[in-house]
Length: 607
Ligand code: G6P
Picture 1 (cartoon, rainbow, N blue to C red):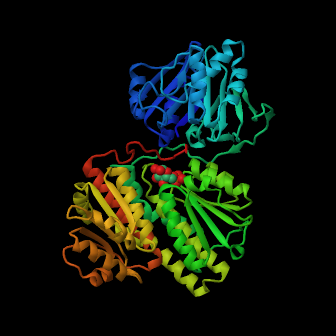
Picture 2: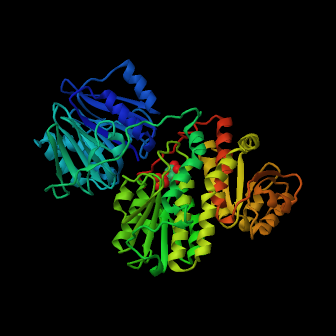
Picture 3: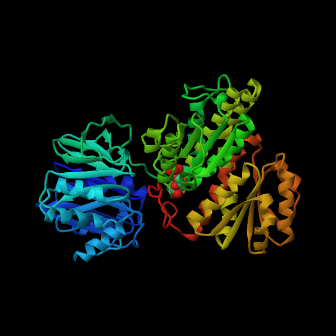
């Protein structure tokens, strides 16, 4: 993971680097560091933990210089200590790295055997040593980097600054994204265009294997064979505004409450509410001719895809293969050219999802992406992008991106159903009508917050929580468990309610809260039977249902969150609110770092 930034400026860069790193902190916050050239000499400041620790260090001991690199780290090799913080350096070069150098062990052994001294446990440290070795043998910095890159395997983006070189910054990309920013007499490198947005919107994305030499006068890009190449410069739409929390205590709370608005924006992109039809964009494929849809994603986006599988199967009668990207990318699943592969990602940078996309591309599939960041790598690689209009999501635990993904996916399932003739015009109207009510129903669900907060007190005292659901509520049970464990650190599991008796029922005792997500629908009765099985073993049930479900369940001694009534098709979108709020309030009561939970990162750019 990690975010890297490089600035070849005509003014002091330390504060600029820090500003850019704030925009990259979503990629990791285990440690941060910057290296600049002070009077021609490399100087560094690094700090364990969040960026604010580095900021404090720099306030006490500023770094001067007009050129430098910075890095925010998500630890892969070596603990999140200051020693392991980037940039890593020798007396000749300092390097910020995003990714993993997979062959670092053999490289390190060889360098150690030559008497080179390593101070960190990172994979990265081999890079400055290799460059240094080349330079000591007479190579220029540019030659040294070119030779070093040939020795590295793995996925990486790198930014180099050199002792005594006040007009030279080098960047390299293989597997991890790297953008070049073109300023007025200044040049930049950054893991994404967002990081560079305060300085410039003129961006060139490096392609796989590219490396770049920056001088204040401009950039020279080389491909992996060291041949100079031209890469297009684009005008990025990334915003330079740093989002704030408004009146909320956490970004996550703000983002939960934004959902009525942002799902509304997303739905408006796909639905024509005047005619109650889906909008039909120009597509590079024909829904009617597809035999199969392959959906791949990670984390919360994967659960959005799992809900969509039910929708595409039911409304479009389209077979859906769904997998987590980390498995899919190595499964070598048989694919037929002309099929459709759909990738779901908030950031558009998740390494496993991107690798899965590339596999499908190599197999001749059409590539579609539901993404929130439309300047991202996944968006740029896709044949067609279906944007979610959630706006920047800062809280590491995904909330509004999830409901926007569901909103877009439900719209696409209806669009596909119409095109395939499996939904009539009347069905389409009914579905669009139902979807148009999502923002209002989300607002109504948010009014349940005081009750949910009280229930969260009980949850916060538990050490294990079970979530159950059937049908589209099953992926929601998985998402509920994920939300709770990622921000409150309480162990939680999501299960298909019908699977309860195949194992998890053994866990149930009077200490175990069981959260049952069950809108009143055609399978409600089945879920009630599973609840009875839990109640008979003393489990403490929290039922999330509607008034009809409450009445039909007619169980004593359980807590019920009564949701507004709604068509079953949109329930997974609206029922997201109670599971998000439950996790949020439990975490606040426990006192964890809700927006930046331990060990996690917003965007997982390593596999
Ligand atoms: C990380 C984040 C999750 C997110 C997942 C996939 O694990 O913490 O919130 O769901 O990555 O990210 P993506 O950006 O591809 O949706």
